[in-house]
Length: 118
Image 1 (cartoon, rainbow, N blue to C red):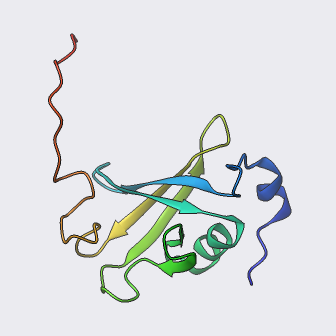
Image 2: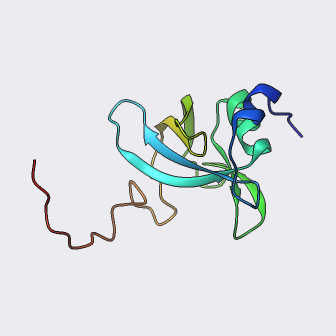
Image 3: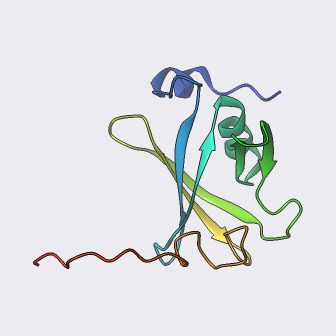
């Protein structure tokens, strides 16, 4: 186990199951790639290894992005939002970010919406 810095741990607001959503963004283009979930251990691993590590809610285990697919996320920076309940993980994505093979997890299903003004 990797201990999360206590100062960071004290600042996090977690869900009832101890998780924090992590929005993942390509560091140089700003493209949103995916949403993952982190607990203290996953965040500690991410901060100390330079590889994005998440908690899989469906498999109930840690996974390092790209460990099996080769589609690695190299961490460039991690930010905590103003409410302290969401992480922004800026990465250099190698290959597809989505498990379906799409470049991002938001490529496949565009919902109809009326464009706003501005």
